[in-house]
Length: 116
Length: 112
Image (cartoon, rainbow over the protein chains, first blue to last red):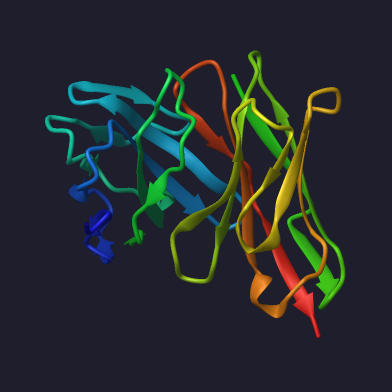
């Protein structure tokens, strides 16, 4: 199993450009999430999904869109990039049991995004 | 909504000394709690989790944490620090909804 994969590893954008960060997992996990990591801020939840066709907002959803058309894929779209979106983005997945997510989240290697 | 507070953004301990990383949580329902470790330029790896079974939870690499409901705490400890423990540590909570919220992290420095 490849686990959680993210592409690209690095990306530089100009202000106003749009792009999609890709995330895929091959573990048949229902729960997937996107976080951004900034120095001194820890990981902040952007969006999450409890299954195909179901997404919801996290702590910092503004400027980002997601969709979940399949169990495997959970892309994150930046609609109009801003310098404040310069960050490292992590995708994660897990297999929740008994309702609330209570299992280990498996993290991808991250995408380092710079917006000029 | 649930939240996590990690006391101390940086903690330094001598090699062989006790490691204590503090985590306090807020949740309107009995929480699920997690500790993750991040080594430089890597993703996060689960150290241990609490899901309402035993209050003392043992994890990988000799780490353990104790859930104390009265103190709303889930502090991470290791009896004897090793140089390889230098990393950033994150506490996380899963509460009423499906969100898993992380703290701001504590960077652990090991002094020779």
